[in-house]
Amino acid sequence: MPDPYVSDLPERPDPQVLLIDAVINRQDDLAARLAQQWVHRRGWSDLAAFIDHGLLRTCGQEGVAWLRQQMQSNPSDRSAPEPEPRPSIGILFQQALDEALAPIRPDSHNAASASSDPWEPAPQQQPARQPVLTKVPAPRPADLAELRSWLHCDAA
Image (cartoon, rainbow, N blue to C red; front, side):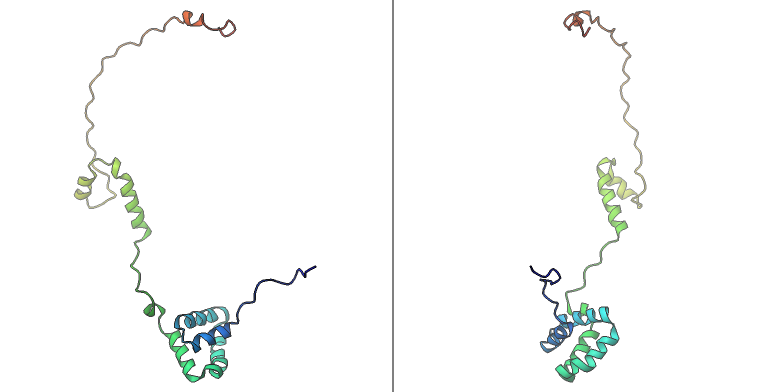
C-alpha cells in the first residue's frame, strides 16, 4: 500500500536558482519579477544578503550591477505603452442611465442640447386632449337560464 503522506506533486524550483538563471541569461522581465517576489516574500534585507553573497559568487560584479539596474528601472518604461485612462464608475453609470432612459424621454435630442445638466428632467409637454366619450350605460345582465340548461344538474 502506498504511503498516504507522500505527495505526487513536483517540488517548486528554488527561487535562488531561478534568479541566478535569469541574471545569467539577462532575462530582464523575469529577473525583475523574481526580485519583486523575493522582496514581497522575504524582505529587502534577505534579497540584499543573497545578492551580496550568492549572486556575487555566481554571476560576478557585472551580473549584480545588471540586476540592480533592472530592479531600479520602472517596468512600465520597458513594457507596453501606458493604457488609456478609464472613465470613472459615476460617468459610466450616468451614460448607461441616459441610454436606458432615452427611448422614454420625449424629444431627448432637443432636451439634451437645450440643457447643460443631463440629470435635469426633460420639460413636460401637455398631453394631447382626448375626445370626450358620451357615457352609455352598461347593458343589463343577460338571463343565464338558457345556458344553465346545458350544465349537468349537479353543477347548476
